[in-house]
Image (cartoon, rainbow, N blue to C red; front, side, top):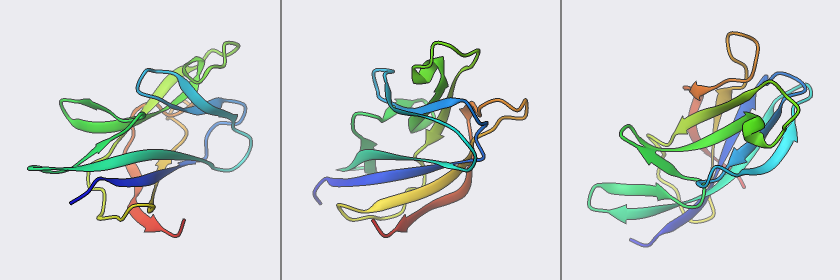
Length: 136
């Protein structure tokens, strides 16, 4: 089986208005920052799935790993490049249970964009809707 190149589309539901969010690459640099207004935000993150004896392994310039698995970050505030804010947070989105996909596919999931304190979501955030293939 060959490597699969695909896109993860992460929908940030109801982020707090005025806060800057971005993808964060594996070197902790903000990529494509955007300021939340009203409504949801969407981030497209390119990844690869590489076959291993243990199954498909997510990788690429945005994927990190720890003892719980592979994940990507969505950053907010200073972590997203906005030096004029009190916020400095990251959302960790684990890449467990990705469905089978072909090269060029887009897999979409939704996460909460707002924490209980009213600020931007942070730490490990569960999926509100599981990964599902959508038309690119």
